[in-house]
Image (tube, rainbow, N blue to C red; front, side, top):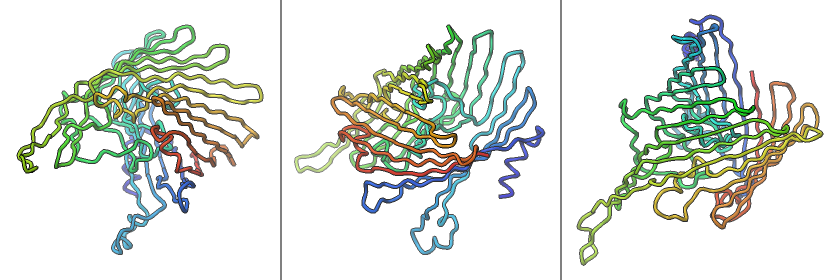
Length: 424
């Protein structure tokens, strides 16, 4: 542990005084709709961050510890291993430095392992494609993984130009179960080679017009989710990652005290070739040959969008509503030539009301339409703040609807949860 702290603190101490912070979040989720209400194995999270620097040079380093409060013992030999009794993983979350007025005035540089967040919507951000999404905890929706990148930003009057370079590809972090995205791909995967030509880049120009912030962006990189590149008759499937171009536009502002925002992204995937290994049989039914047949998956452009608003009514009743067309994990629905396969349409609403200074009641509603199939879900929650930097959330999650929808397929689970968070 001392070595970890030394590695964590030394680079920052070189800059001078260090400000430490972070959070600890622990909780439990139970499938109340299943027999005996089993727990859902979600990790607890401890994140420690250090910041230091002067006016023109700043550094940030953070570590994340994910730990479980259940054992992964499969044999008696595991009983002598503390890692099996209390599984945990420690990873470098962010490590980057920032230089303002780099080379010339109004030019900033950020370089290192960092999170670059684009988009204006609440969690559902189709233009936020720099960092891969983190689906390891389906209840922490909207989380992304920091990756190594270099970003330069130039400011001129009310205009900002951002340019980002990403030298290597990092895929999305998938969940260990099929609760959210259905069947998890199984088989060998092939990441793009570590070559300069396989890098990614993005540009964004943003400004403010009539009190609305808006931006136009372009991303050339990879889709973060695996797609089949070889479907074998005898061997397992293999997976790869295809190139894509994304043009995006977003806005946010206020009109008559109503907050308004929107994001639109047009995805143009490369013609991703897939080999389907088709067997040839003789008259006795024996396989005499396997012929690879090339086809193209992910060949048609498509779009995703989010439009939302929020408003605070009298007596401090807060309302947030969004229309969402397409989720990150729905990309597999765009595979193949079946024109009936398409992205889902969702309505997500949230109402919040502070009862006392330290107690808040929240009700979240979700509606989903997929073709002729409908589903919806509700999440009532109570949030209690015993102190300013501490909160306790207790809630319940239940869905209804057709099995042909994402949320309809989850209706048998009916989950109750409690979370504790301490910020420091």
